[in-house]
Each structure stands twice: as C-alpha cells, then as structure tokens.
Image (tube, rainbow, N blue to C red):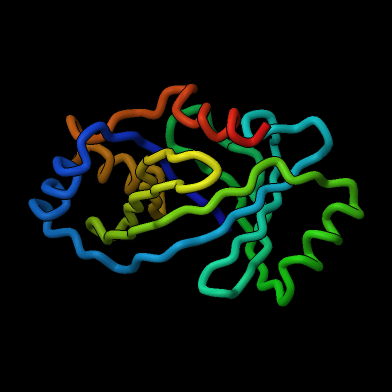
Length: 171
C-alpha cells in the first residue's frame, strides 16, 4: 500500500478551524496514540530511509513498515505496510533482537477531518515535547495538492527545524 501525504504547519489554530468550517469539512475521529519508531544503529528520524513503527491506539497495537520517500516534492509518497501485533512489548523485544534500536517514542493527540475526500489530521504531539502540525493524506499526489491549496494562507510548509524539539527531547 502507498502512503501519500504532506506535513504542514500553522501559526493560528483558530484560522485553521475557521477554514475547516468554511469548507464544510466533516470531523471523523479523535484519538490518542503512542508511536515507537525503530531503525538501525546510528539512524535518526531524519536519516533513516526505512522505518519500523509500533503504534498503539485504543489498546491495540500494529507494526508498520514505512519505506523510503519516493518523491522529491513536499508531498511524500512511500510504501506503508501495517500488520496487527498482539503484544507491543514482545514485538519491541523482537525488533531489538534483530539489531533495531528505538529512535523515537511519542504520544500524540490526533483529530481527523474529511476535506473533499482527503483526510486532514491536526496532530498535537504531547510527549516527549509539544509540537503541532497538520497532515493531509489522499489517494493521489494531485488530491493532496488540491486540498493543500484550499488552505493557502492558513497552512505553510514545515521547515527543517519544526521537529527539532523532538530530537532534543529524545537525546
């Protein structure tokens, strides 16, 4: 399966919510997750080309393989494969025994909206540091770009330092 998404930032949450209402976007779900990302020794979230993630949502865990980014644009396209995991801790032990190390663990509150057939997520990372951003995910690069254009002036590209707080808190 392919993941097609863009990450954006906002400086005014009220303006973002006003735009969602103006577009008659529909809220779909809100939940909290715990994500643990794994890579090879010495890799970071910035340098890893392939990542493994254990995500726990509502007490249920899944293992995800995220492949290397396949595009040069701000819209990311990459392979994403998910499989249910019965025991988070045992899966983590398996990964560590395979030589993987935990790169990052975070707790995030996610609020999703349907915007013209694409999914817009308002992400609030709560731990290990507070970082807010938006993800727009769609069926194609064109769908993602179309929805992104609807938020011109409200959302803007994330700069390379946007997630720096996470890196610093993770040391």
